[in-house]
Image (cartoon, rainbow, N blue to C red; front, side, top):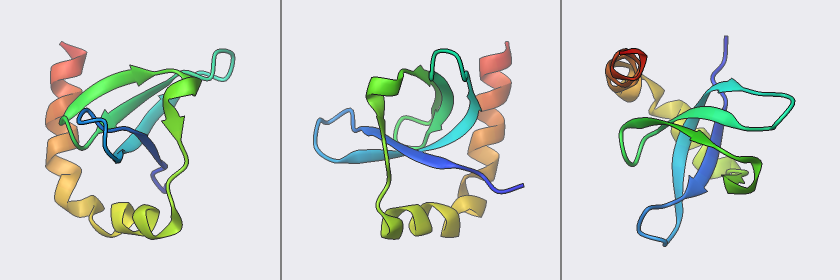
Length: 80
């Protein structure tokens, strides 16, 4: 299965944070995501979602293995 990446406004207000979609609610368009910038699991609304440019999307996919452990830890903490 291939992961899906979206963007979210950076906490600094400048730029876009790369986020991996974990789950999405079709009815509300909300999504549960792993935010690489903050290293946390978050719920975001449709209004907060941004499409990533192809080069940024490719970067996210190319660096996916570097974030596997961080995603697992964040998910474990989120499930508590």
